[in-house]
Length: 335
Image (tube, rainbow, N blue to C red; front, side, top):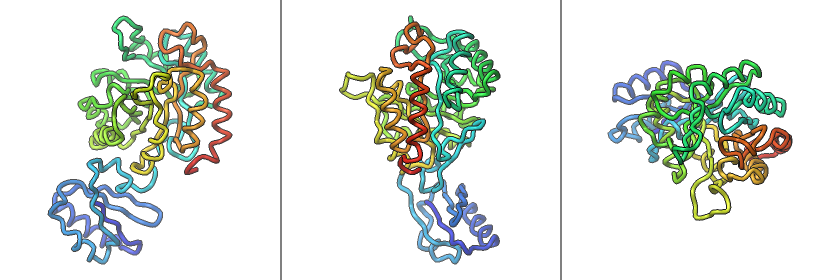
């Protein structure tokens, strides 16, 4: 349930109402906008009389929320959430570019790519240290050493880093990581999501291969219910009958998520297509549709990459993409 307060309410009225609601064993999420204050009521609201609340002098309106996700719901939090990481503001109106290799392979590789993507306009560096691979015989990542190399690249370039976690037991290694990525395969690893909810670090939550919008938002709810409001939703393609691309990029999910949730939405066209030639046009389409950012795989030698070389852009191709993205961004939906 949400309670919309009148502009003219006094602090005494506010404190009195909140005290009464807490006495009903309800948790209150307060969202103060420019013109309105909205109270999100969490808990068993079935016994709460909506008409009685509407009759209070302080109350403008009362609405029951049927969706099971509450904290991620725009009805509870009408204003867009903006997540600040270094100099980047994700959800702040200007699309952010997160770029780097699928996996960290060596010191020379990650430093070279980091410098290239920064020069092209990226504001965050991505790179996999732990790699979930379909085959146990494929490259599994450099693990702790990979995180150390990402931190060295951060020190050299100033770019905050984004890297994927595979299991909650790895959290101590992520102490200095700026954004923790939850991959598509782990979107419904609920025990890990609970642990991430106990941190305050931003979490980039990727949509599962066959997951619905509701399931993605419920996974975000797990993190937020634990006390961490810093969730970034990521569309990375879903599994369909089509085989021309690795997955099918669901562009429609960008406006859908913005309508349903206040959380930032970014798009990963690299994993969606699996083909570097398609990354640029789909990246542009995502930004035009209102995406708050992109996460792009960039490699200085994709032909010899240990992971996902076919979908990786070379630095010069990423620079061309970045130039066009920034050119169209002011004309995108919701800008």
